[in-house]
Structure formats: C-alpha cells, structure tokens
Image 1 (cartoon, rainbow, N blue to C red):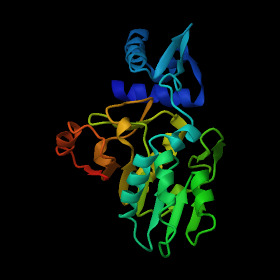
Image 2: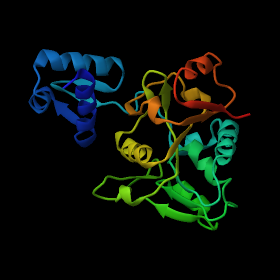
Image 3: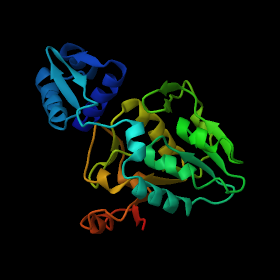
Image 4: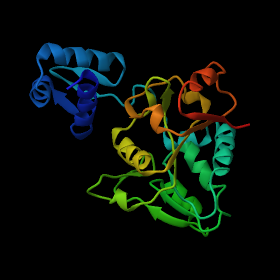
Length: 253
C-alpha cells in the first residue's frame, strides 16, 4: 500500500472509530511502527489528526469551521452571485444534485421557475426552500447531521446507483491545484464522492475564501471536476494556474 493510500485509510478508520491506538493501526495496515509514525507525523503536520496518549484522534474543529447558520449569512452577496451563475447551466428537464452547503443552498432560490426540473439533495434547507415549488424533490435517506441540517448516507442506506444525475452542484471547504477539493467532515464526503462519480457534469460552487486551503479530508482531484464557479474576489494569481488543468474556472460578476 502506498503512503497516500495508507493515510486515506487512517482517516477512513477514524470516521468509524473517533480514537485509534497505534497497535490497532499497525495491525490493520500491516506496517511497522516506524512506517506508521511517518504517516501520522505527516497527517498531524497537515492538521488532519491529533496525537493523544497511545494513539490518535480526528481533528475536525481545529480549523474553526463555522456552523451552517453562520455560513448562511457570511459572504452572502458573493454566494448569491455564484448561485445565479450556476443557474445559467441548469436547463428545463434536468435532474440535478444540490449539495448541503451555504453556497449551494442559494441555488434553490433561483430555480423555482424551471420546467420539469428534478432536484436530488441531502440538504434540509434546500428541501424547505423548494417544498412549495413545482420542482420534483428527491431527498437522500440516511443519518441527519443536526448542526449542518444535512443528511449523510451510505450505499447500504440509499441506492445511489438508481439515480440518473445530469449535473451535480457540490460545495467544498478547501480547493488547491495539487489536491483538488476537500472538506471537514468525513461522513459528508461519502455522499459528495458518490455524486461526483455518478453525475455527467460536476460543478463546484465555492466563494473565493476557500481557495489555497486543504482541509481535513480530500473529496476529489481537479480532473474529476468539470467546472468551479466562484466570485470576483478570487486572487488573480489562481487564474493562470487553472488554465493548466482540465477544470473550467468560472468567475461570477
């Protein structure tokens, strides 16, 4: 197993058990203590895990992730602008996925007049926004994250592969050229990865503050993302970097 694969496996194990002993990890990964220590030192340096006596635990709040309610009102003008730009890519008759997040939520406010539109979502605020519209709604089943007002799911809870998604609108807490998009919560990324895998086109809707950040867990590399839509406050130094990737960077006015 390559180092990156081991490190990903460590984070996945921490999603199930919030605290792991060193002995458990060496047995699970079939590696020496020295090899494991190198992986753990790197993950600690990246701020993704925290060492405790005899083991490690996941770090989720170290970066100061705000609640969904706080994010709903921060950078609101930029998020509304991004959402309006996203709506230019949504057509009558589409079946789209809207992710749980403060930026992707804004999309729901601007699509109510679309004809024969189907929205698949794991966001309770998106459901509430569209409940009285003519949009056909499908909500993903699973465990409710009350603080995020979202639903996290797994294959054994929801049959993802029955969905036929034309366009997925995904949120993220971090974007880098090297690592792609990342987020704080491991459970939340399970659904995001599934939707990226299933959708014909993938749009990431993020405000400019998320760039040059690589947070707790990786979601997808840039080669899996068709479009990134952000606001005009983006540092201009990023624009030429994206020209070397297969991802289209779109800046809303």
